Image (cartoon, rainbow, N blue to C red; front, side, top):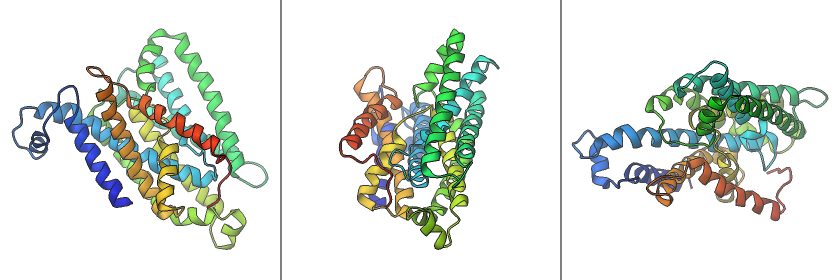
Length: 325
């Protein structure tokens, strides 16, 4: 499965570099990437390569984050947005634009990351209080409460300032277009650390799925595992949202599809979900360029169009229950 996903990701990347308003032959793409002379080298290196790289990194991050979030909450709807990260990032971006007057993604990207991280940590702190610690149900409720609160604050900010609304809505729709390659490079360390942490925790996640009591009897530190898992989700989702906006449903759809092939073992599920997230987001960006020529449809719109029916299918098939592998 991992090999097939890796090949699919390679095909999606090649398509992203070759397909656009003007089609570029794959031979010219390879020539441009290897330093050779190609007539469309500028288009490939300065326009398509940055958005492809950003889509790849964001997809890897969102796919892995979704798998970890579903495992630490034992909730089939454990999308990273469940613990408020997307809402926190959105609020931080709106605040940095409206209050501080920032205009460049290079400026407000760090506010987005910080806002997502703080919101996720707040949700985990609230969910971890009281008897029993951070149980899946309490984490879900705390994340929902933080999300509602921050969404209301964000709506207030953007409605009070037309300039903030105009700039914020371009970021909030979830697009890879117009992004600079330097953005992905700056976020790369966060994504790498998050991926390493997520993979390192996969063995503990398997124990966690057996239930808190049994996991404890097997020597797993339940609270520490959930805390580290939340940190991984914060790093991965915060970086992805900061770069490309709050792209939805990647973290929900991909782990469910991958689990059908790899089984519930998190040691395979987490890395394969990362690869699957990269495939989905890069492919969605490519399809968006094709279906709306000569314009394009944002990747976030495509993932929502895929994710909404998927969510409806989950409901219809009766899978909206706390899952244990």
